[in-house]
Image 1 (spheres, rainbow, N blue to C red):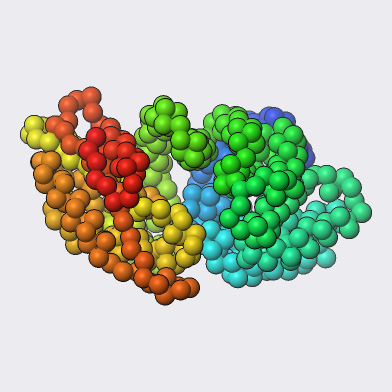
Image 2 (image 1 turned 90 degrees about the vertical axis):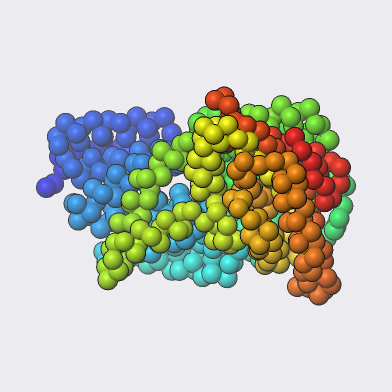
Length: 540
């Protein structure tokens, strides 16, 4: 059924404000949904939901965006609209990529490509391959990312030859140059990265250049920092980094449009990490202020958690224990809220993913698919230990049981001493091998205790009916086993020892205490253990 002229005009109005005026874009989407609902136009309703999901995505409201896109995905399949289905799968894949769910993201991207190739939508295909490159960048598979960019470039060229305007083609080329520059920065080819950025100035269209100025500034800052870091190894002299800091000043000055801020949020976090690395304190404070404002405007707990992590790192570098202690409670409360939000959307995400896998793997039984998904959702793929989701489910159950039986529950939190330095020095492959070895020691020495990877190099053990002596012996046995593991490095083949810092807490849980209280107290003990030096075991 053809949509009415009113609906068509509202769709065009929404497209007109995309990435240009956020408030007008949101209002246009609301008007489109209202009109489509009134006319009972299912395709227009699905389109309105898609536009609303896009607006939420570009504000980094990922949970809300995901709900809209899953709704659109169901509708597009019922309507047999392959274009909308393909674009929707692309956006869902992008959200999972931002959440570091790379395997799920790749599934959705392949589904998107299948739909869009069927209808020869080259523009949307180019977008999907661009987003797929982000997955491979997350996985540090940069050659695959480069191949995705080249494929995206190819489909964009096809689109511009058949349908695209000259302005669209030029804008896409600008974006490709910026992405190539950032990718070559990851490949540590700074000469090539700088060449791509310098080529941007050859474009005669000043208005187009201005539209991507924020992205260009960020790319120049990241490439400049890495180039200077390569030239001046192990220095924190701010004079050396003056060129980079000038670019940071420009970024901070022009970062007034909240839509842009949300769009480049992960690049801003990288730049904040660089500033912390060289102790550029005045810029750190400004960047933190910008990021906190962005998180507040986006209503994004995800961004706020990432900002809190950087603030903790910053306060640690300052040696400000008081500020760390104050922030830690807010950080854990937000983590708990985030986990509750994730639990709320977990079922809908899982069911939607099962449906995608059923279509792709029709010969396999539904029971086998569900079992595979349960395994994936409960265990960490690198270490084979339980993941945080499983930890929450198991830990809360143990907490209730300990409360009912009036017996103590013990929690141990441990991490690898100086893991970031180890990882940066010897590379992620050796770092991953280190974590697997630690996980093996935990598995072989944990006995009846439940063990999980909490995140990064941090692990959590839960012991039911725990006594202090039992917790200390458990911690020592893991610590000693890890210390006996000799890990050769890739570059030097020199044997390297690993040490663990460990904090623990045990108590009979009362009604006021939740699992996060136990983990938080053990984690605070861990931080005191680190203050005492490597390889210490400290109680709360």
